[in-house]
Image 1 (cartoon, rainbow, N blue to C red):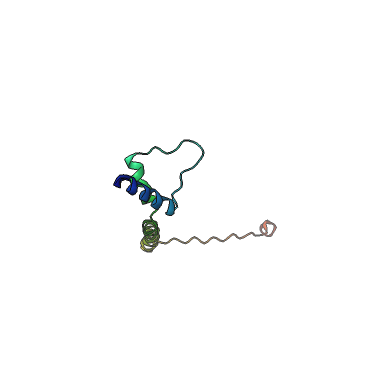
Image 2: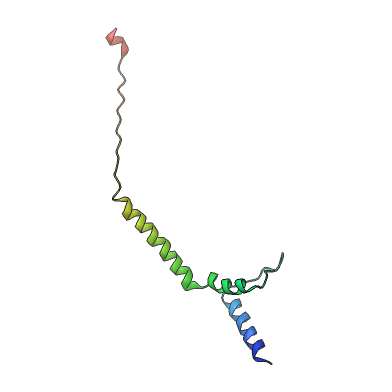
Length: 87
């Protein structure tokens, strides 16, 4: 067995273990270089956790920035009086 086929099988086994599943229905994905480079990046647990941390930091940053914005408060009072008293 050639080295190429051994590496190819090892790559496919790694993708299968990482949760990468090719759907059985519909058209199969096109096996392009972009597909093979993008597939591991989408299923890398460390990258997914880093993206979640970035989203959390963005939320915290937005909250901190909002503290410097002016705060407005609106109070209203409605007084209903008997109009018969003034007639």
